Length: 157
View 1 (cartoon, rainbow, N blue to C red):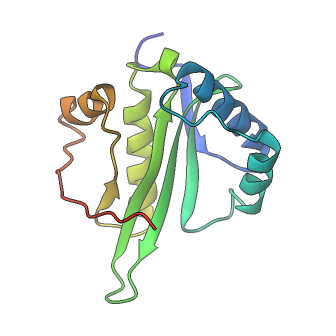
View 2: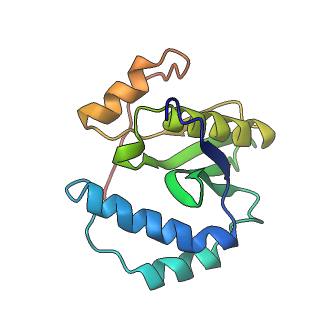
C-alpha cells in the first residue's frame, strides 16, 4: 500500500462505535501479550456511547480507516489548568494494528492530534510512550515528531 495512502484520518463519532469495538478485539488477537485479553465488547460499546464522541469539546478518538476497517486510533484530551488557565493536550493512547504498521499511519494520527490540540489553543501536548523497543523506535526515529524526554512521577492508587 505504501505510506498508508488508502487510509483516511477522521474524528470518531457514534456511528463508529461498532468499528471501534472490532478494532479493540483485533488488537487483542494480534498482540495478546501487550493488551489485556479481557474485553467485554457490549460494555465497551456502552462506555463509548456514554462519551458522546462527536460532541465532546475536550476529548476525541481520532481514527485511521482503510475502507470500512479501522487500522489505527489516537485518543486525545484537553486539560485546562485551574491555576493559570493553560490549555495542554494529552494523548491517552495511540495504536496501529500490527499488519498496518510502518506505513506512516501513526505519524498521520499524531499530526491529526496536533491539529486537534492547536484548534483548542494548546501550546504543547504530552504522551506516555510504551516501553517496548518497537514503540520507542517509532517515537525517536522520525525527526518531525521531535519529542522531548521528561521525567514522570507515578503513584498507583
